[in-house]
Length: 272
Image (tube, rainbow, N blue to C red; front, side, top):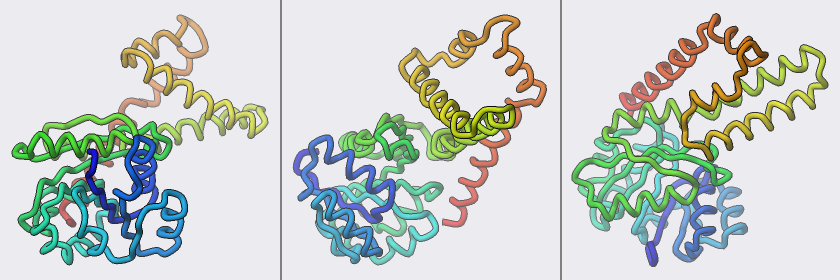
């Protein structure tokens, strides 16, 4: 992406993470720019990274080869509609990281512009350990896909999905997924404290276990069932705990949670 000018509409947590990741990978601050309505956000981004910022979306988008849309789904139409004529003329690669907002809606707001790629990163992108699901319509040029992937790879792994509907599942599994693991760790810590551990010690144990289990899974071949079995001695404590999970129908609970997240993602798409 040497020489590419990347503009961000929205400088919140995910926009900031992408900017930090791109600069860490060699992007020049002079080739990055951010539009954000909040002066404090703009000042912090300029102070920390030395890049150009503005409150005016049009000013920032005017010089973009790649335009990253890092705004909430509910305001996407309001943000993009005024940019339509500019985008139709300049035809940048547009990357949206808004959950649920379909390519058709984005194309309608952007006018007859350039290629559009949807991306669903997750919160671990904030520490460079994210994973992003990517989707592009079948007629998207290979070079546009490569550029989009290079932007999101700045904050972690990337995977392409075959259909736009798949992104709703990506959102439910990895986009929302960190909250599920945090919830489990939260309850582990609470259970440890209930059974007599100092609350701070219980929390530290839960957090370190969450981190370590994630590293083990990431650095392995990805066979989660095998990893689980390796921790589970026959007749031991882990087996007893897993049996309690099974009695409570833990698998059904997780399936219901993921289904609910997918449903909500599709509801957001209908609103957009």
